Structure formats: C-alpha cells, structure tokens
Image (tube, rainbow, N blue to C red; front, side, top):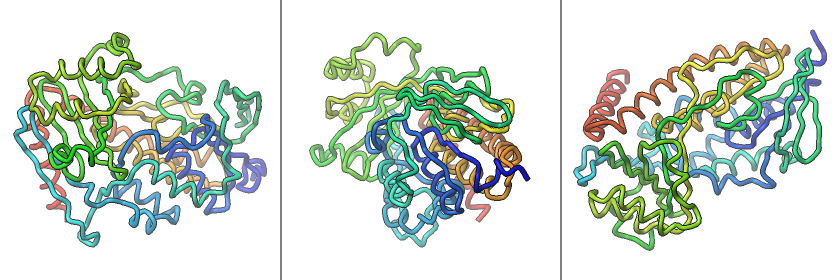
Length: 390
C-alpha cells in the first residue's frame, strides 16, 4: 500500500466551509481521518446565506445520522415548516398542506435554517481544522495525485486529495474540466419580511412555504426559524437584466418588481411592499444535466461545485450532504485515494444526474403556462406513488 495515500498520512484539503464541506470534514473526523477546511470568508457566514432548508430522509438526514447529529437535528428542526401552499396570481389555492407535528408520523423533509444546520456541524468539528480567510487563487496539479493550492493571503499548501466544496463558481472545477455553469434563464430577487410586523402576510403565508406561480413568473415565500419570511420574486429574463437595476436603491427595485407583478393578488404583492431594504439579486445557474469530468486521482468535487442545478427539486444542500457522506465512506473503505474517488464519483454521477434532470423539468414546468395547476397535478402523482410504495 502507498503510505502517502494511507488514512494516517494523506493530506486532505476541503475547499469551502458550507454544509457540504462541514459534513464531509465531520464524518471523516468521526472515522479518525484528518482533513482541513479552507474557507474564503474571514469567519462563518452561514447565518447570512440562504434561508430555510428541507432536509430529506434519503440524503441529508442519512449524512446527519452518520455524523452523529440526527438527534440534535430533530430537536432543532421545524416539522411544521413542511406546510405548503400553492396558488396562482389571483390567490386561487391549488394545494394547502398542513404538516402533522407528531414526529413519529413519518415526516420526511423537516425544515431547518441554514445557519442553525451549520452551527450543529461546527459545534462538533475540531475548530483547529478550519482555516478562515483562505480564498483559493490558483490550483496546480503536481502529478502523482498531489495538488498545490495557492491562496490570496499568500499561503501555499500541498495536498494528496483536494475536494472542491466551493459552490457553483468553483475554483477547483477548472482543474477537472473546461465545462462551466450556464445561466438557466431564471433570475430571482431575494427579499425579507419580518413576520411579526405584518401579521396579515404571516397568516397568508402560513408556517412553511408559499408558491404563487403564473405568467412565467413566481413569488415564493418561506417562513424561517428567526421569524423572517424569505421571499424570492422570480422571473425569466435575459442574463443582463440585473445590470439595469441598482442594488443600492431598494425602493426603486421594489417599484420595478411591483410593476412586473402589477396584476397579481394584493396579498401576493405585499411580499414585495412589506420587504426590508436589503434585496439580493440572484441569477440561477446550472451545469449540464449528466455533467461528468475526467477523473483525477487527487481531486474531486461535491455539492454545487459538482452538480449545481436550479432549486426546483429542493436538492441542493441535500445532495451536498449526500456527496459528503458517500465520499467520506469511500475514503474510509479505500486506503488508496484514487480508488476512493472512483467509487464515490460513479455513485454521485448517477444520482446527481437524475436529480438535475428532475430539477430542470420542474424549472420548466414552474415557469410555463398553467404552472400552478400543472405543479399541483405533478405533486399529487408523487404523493400517490409514495403511498403505493408504503
């Protein structure tokens, strides 16, 4: 056996300290395999990124069980967050699901805020294994499975295994492929409403998610654990549309959004009217469905770096955590790094391609004609299939 690639000797670098990178490091730590996370931010910023996450039984929850965090997750998760309302622009409701809060009754996708999830992972992780303020500038293959990492702070590290957990615009991915992300055609503006300040909208939104879809547009509301309603005003536009608005003039941005949704139900427009002044523009990017790369014996990817897709299958963080689980266990089973990478990637390419296709189909459906009734029919067919299986 190559001693450099043994669990005791191989130097493992994880680029990115989001849920995927943290989960991977924690599961490796549990199995006695050291790894170092290199995070570009100067400190943990997970509470500022994204909103509530639904953690799936067959992916994210499996990773949390392996990491020894499942009970802590159950205590922190919001099972009432599974409530879901679907309507069209007039406010006509097509689905109005209310979750059973009895945790013994087969809940499959409880909600947890991204920051809370990362806190659970960080609290069990050896803090000496996280390097903050390490933004990857350049990555160089040295051959024989070794890779050199150059960071903007001037530090240079050499690793036997590099895992890119650094998101859609990964700095690690170009070492494996020339293929890059593409604009999906969908743009979102993320807004925040304080629910307690607007009880009418809080009641309209209910305890979980609200989707209003019509006219190739959408207003999506999501109640978070901190009392905010995260709002995503979503629409199909050219990639350069965001260049026509100014992020530093929120009232002008809200006026532009109200113009786009001028004939929508008043309660739906209130998601925009009531929003606070911090508005985050987001273009939605994706990698091609079925994306693969040429294998490298010392480099691989997890999460959005490996398979970024639209959010319309609810799989982003769940796949990142499943990737972390599969890669960690492959490294436990295989002392040889190249064999571990091969085992992991073959599994990951298969399940991520299936989810990427599902996500793309859902994106098309949600922003096409008659989106609300068509999505209701699709969800009902999923429910019927699940009932038949159980």
